[in-house]
Image 1 (tube, rainbow, N blue to C red):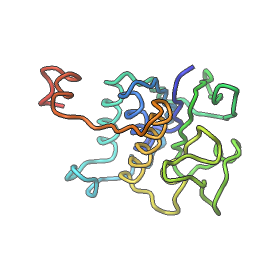
Image 2 (cartoon, one colour):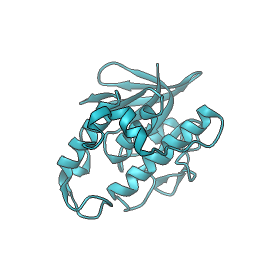
Image 3 (cartoon, rainbow, N blue to C red):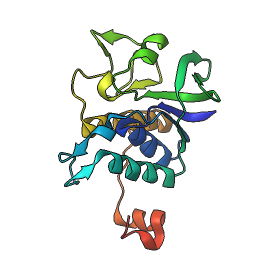
Image 4 (cartoon, rainbow, N blue to C red):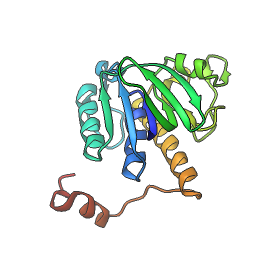
Length: 194
């Protein structure tokens, strides 16, 4: 069993994995590589002047991989259900179980619907932390917003979900805030390159 199962490997899913894994929660990402980012070019992502969407995704994947995320490229989630300990996610390969679930499947809301998440019209109903009506299950990005499919919004949703999970785990509001000495501790002599 992992701590956090994340279905979807776009900006929301990988950001959730990054924040969770970086802060001590084992994360597994199921990624079919169906992200719209492969059709995008980013000119409006803060801090990035211009980057091809596929190149951005490769950089983000390398970043989560460097923290040890169990990223299962090419694995499709085929079903999800609640268990006594969290969630069971069926896949086209080995099933995955986790205490928390983050759905980051773009505009595809099928898993949220089958899990019994409440909807607000056509979108999954979430609170400000991205938690759905199902305790411990989060929904992000295009599945919770009508026609607001921006990489930076999705990444923010993924971060909000992970920070809420971390807050639940730690029993207090958790802040993922690093200082320059943290970079040295994490990246060693490569801190200036990171």
